View 1 (tube, rainbow, N blue to C red):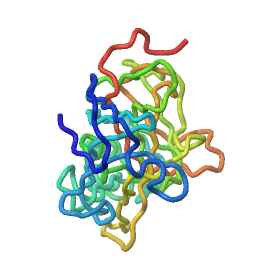
View 2 (cartoon, rainbow, N blue to C red):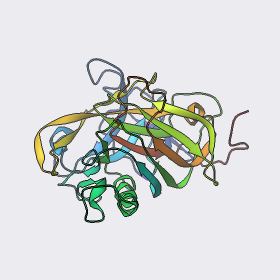
View 3 (cartoon, rainbow, N blue to C red):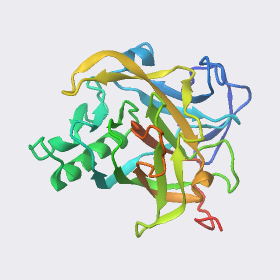
View 4 (tube, one colour):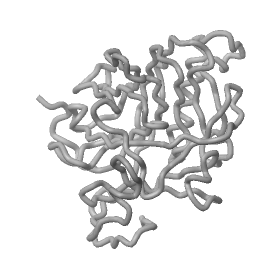
Length: 291
């Protein structure tokens, strides 16, 4: 697979899993955004000159480059969503996909709107909402995410389309998951699950002690929407961070539970989230959970 780069870096080798080595730093990495650290994520925005003008349209993930120079252009997307829970008020949990998008299911969808009765959240609502999340997370349009505006309990479980494996049993700068968050001001808990749905490894609160980063070389933005789903003026900046599977205490996973942290204290738990797997390794690991 050919990678089209927007920088002056030169590809000098290809390894398993489409991991590329580059012989010089990518222009703008580490300094492409003023203030705070950055994560280098390259996108395409068809019909738009820059991500800033594509806030209501497609923001298509192309490749990610990690601090050690490793660049990866193969990603693992969600294949199924289930077990949606939500205990908050209406109009506070929704799925957003830029209304001008051609990839995904464009629109703003509240969790309570599935069964035709917008006054409460029913079992049918939660089942339909699981499909809404799937339609937002099963492709490379980053302008599709879960928008949470309540501090109440929520959770849902996602199965990835293939096993995500750690590239190294040691902690390193190459992430196997990319977690996105609108504005980078909230926290979200992720847990690896086994085939029986039991937690394995160690739950991780993303955004609490592991900084949300600005995206480089170009900042990413998503639109603002009213309660009825209509676009509003302005935009929010999309932040992200990489998660090494080592931080979850596992070497590989197929399933994640995403939820409100129960020990969040006064932190903002209204995470507007999108998670993408990164194909860093195709080699099965000997053990799945660390001792």
